[in-house]
Image (tube, rainbow, N blue to C red; front, side, top):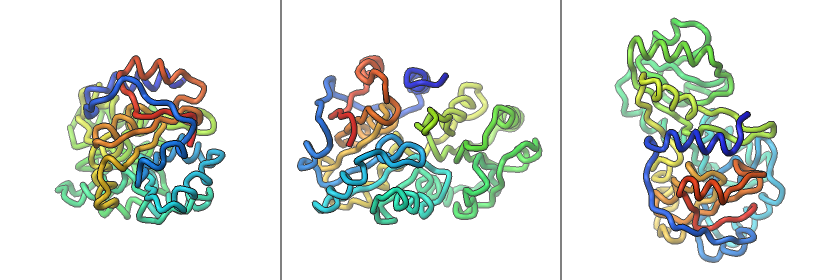
Length: 297
């Protein structure tokens, strides 16, 4: 069964592929974001485990974000959810009761799309679902399914969304890359994501398996890697790093990524990866410590 402990061990096994950062040793506990909001002008918000779990808004989250916006604070969603284009993600947050500007929803998919514009590969095979709108990526691409020919008929591989992925397809991809190595770009570095029914396996999980098998050296787009934080900083303009707070529910994506970007971090523990778990233990085990820690927004 996948648990927080399982996920932390999986991230630690892949730690050598993640960026490095410096951390303090004792996070400061707070009751909620209101207690420290005055210290910051901008907030980078993870989605799953912070704003929502699956298709459900976390109780109180819409009110907290609305109050920050009323105070004139900048609020950006910084998500590794890459399956769908920005307009689909923005519509989802609107449906859940949040009022983000469309340009303030920044997904790892955007960082991937920018990188693809400079690539020379002609045709890509993509781990995705049928509604992923691959045409929006600006490339020639096809979905990878159950036909081995689909894995041969491409110059590169993109791991975008794992909703329809299977062990059989992972085997086909591993065999194809072993026979003919090609670039592997990962649009979602997450290993797991919190859903209503538990932790789902995300593209990062399958990417690290390819690397462990020695058939690929994946390139990642999204937290904790700098490409998505660079996009956020561009969007925020002149706001200094010391006035920006990254808020998330994971150590290896949100906290590590925020620390690597030189900004403060807040770890939430009640609704995401560490819901019902011992976050203190995992911080000690990994040496990854946020600036602040709270149950929820």
